[in-house]
Amino acid sequence: MTGVYGVVLAGGKSGRMGKDKRTMILTSGMSMEENALRILSSSSCSDVYTSGPGGITDIHPGKGPMGGIEAVLHALKDNCVMFLPCDMPLVMPHQVDRIIRCFIQRPHLPSVAFAPNMEPLVAVVPALWGEMISNAVALGHLKIGKFWQDCGFTPVKIPEGYLLKDADHPWELPA
Figure 1 (cartoon, rainbow, N blue to C red):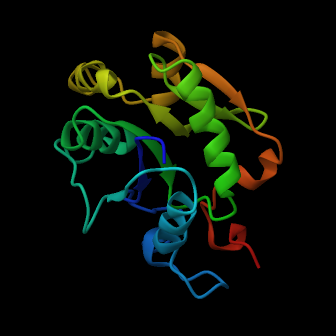
Figure 2 (spheres, one colour):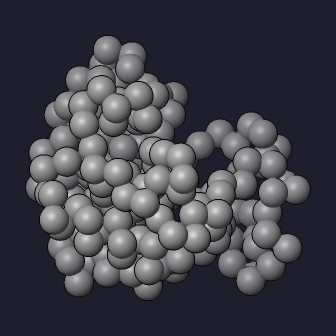
């Protein structure tokens, strides 16, 4: 265990999917949310939570993933958080652990997955960044990738990066 909490981001509108992603059932028989919780629970995260319905709710609804990240960092004060969107069903626990290990080496900056491009929602965020994220949300700066680029981060190259593909449409779900 690392002292890094794991949080599944499951509060999106799922407009492209046509129905709530978090409740969609995968071929494993688990919902996308349950699968993401399993991935984080199987990693070195010390505790695991959900952001969205039935979990940590947004302070400022309608602000997208930045609003979810803000709410989580506010609710889990003084804790670093590994974020994983529920719509990335192929991510492996060892990939999560790689990001956490990189974060432990540079704990003052977010560690963000690259596979080969930035996956801005697959990241460990230091607790002390909560106020910066709240300020960005208040100013309407809601693009998390741009936020990381503007403020600094540690890029983490993920081998087998093709597993970090998100499923935005029903045909993108693994068979």
